[in-house]
Every structure is written in C-alpha cells, then in structure tokens.
Length: 128
Image (cartoon, rainbow, N blue to C red; front, side):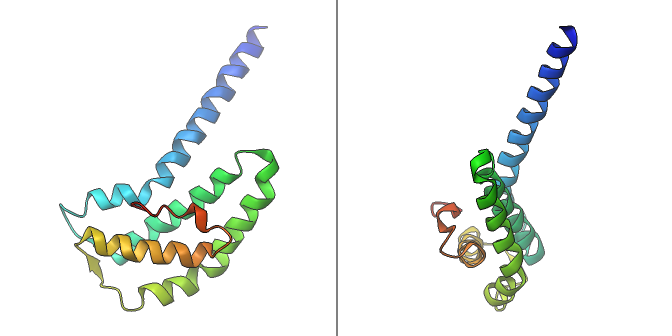
C-alpha cells in the first residue's frame, strides 16, 4: 500500500512538472518580450523563443490522448516549414529588436507561417 502511495505521489509530481514546464515554454516569447525594455533582443533569441512557444502549444494539444495524432501533425508541420518561414519572415528583419511591437509583429507573422491555416487558432493574436 505504501508503495502505491509513493508511486502516486511521484506520478502526480511528474505530471505537475510537465504541465508547469509546458506553460513556461508556451510563454517563452512573452517572457523574452519583458526584457526588451531593458536590453535589445537579437534575432536568434527571438526565433528560438518563438520555436519553443509554438512547439509547446502543439504539445499542449496532446494532453488529451485522443489528440496525439493531431499533436504529431502539428509538430511535423512546424519542422517542415520552420526553415522556410524563418527565411521568408526574418529576411529583412533587424539583427536586434529594441521595440516590443516590432518583435510582436514578426512573431505573429512567423507563427502564422509555420502553423498555417490548420493550426492558426494556436496563435495568440492579443500579445502572441
């Protein structure tokens, strides 16, 4: 009985951590934007936080076991279009961003590109 309780606590802690980690990753871009007033962010940091965020949003789809196939489809879509969208969206972007609204604009365009119309509902249009 004691082993079952310990196992249940470990599983609950693991699932709680996974949920917290996914929420943190989904907010990666917003967290980066909070630092833009203090110091500019470079294009690499922006792309990295956007990729982290869109992958986490796709993985959030898979929290329900019936949606695992949809989650895989979403992740495959990101990996398929990631390089192409980076070239297309960030081709004329500045090397460093010191303006939050400009970074948000590029972020929205990039997310819409990699997620296409099929998963467009995952793009947060308020802040991103």
